[in-house]
Length: 115
View 1 (cartoon, helix red, strand yellow):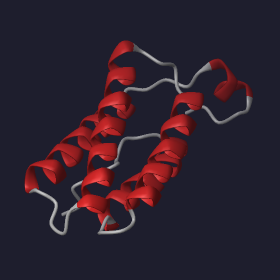
View 2 (cartoon, rainbow, N blue to C red; view 1 turned 90 degrees about the vertical axis):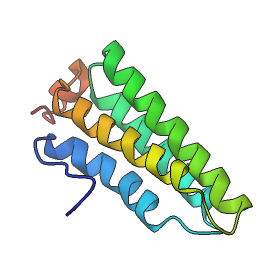
View 3 (cartoon, rainbow, N blue to C red; view 1 turned 135 degrees about the horizontal axis):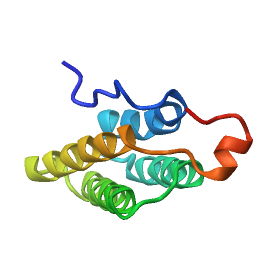
View 4 (tube, helix red, strand yellow; view 1 turned 180 degrees about the vertical axis):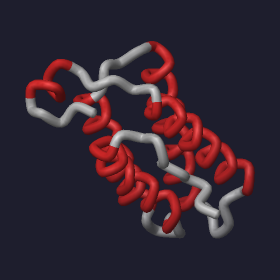
């Protein structure tokens, strides 16, 4: 079972989110910088496409913070504590749930990328 079930998320948002999810899934010692960079890119791309509501902003911020914590941990420790991995999974699941309710912003609609 996929812990990051993106069903119901608009396809354009899934495309932007997938690299972030993949980086989390493959996270291992020594690639913290890659995880951080990938999360930063997806984070900004998502922000540019959706109408930001307080709940979406919070979900994005929480997911980014949890990912950054994971990235730091994988570069500093041999074994990442389970609570860190659980926190990032929960934050991403919450973000996915919030993205299911997301609306395209004006620029996204103008580009014909709306859903």
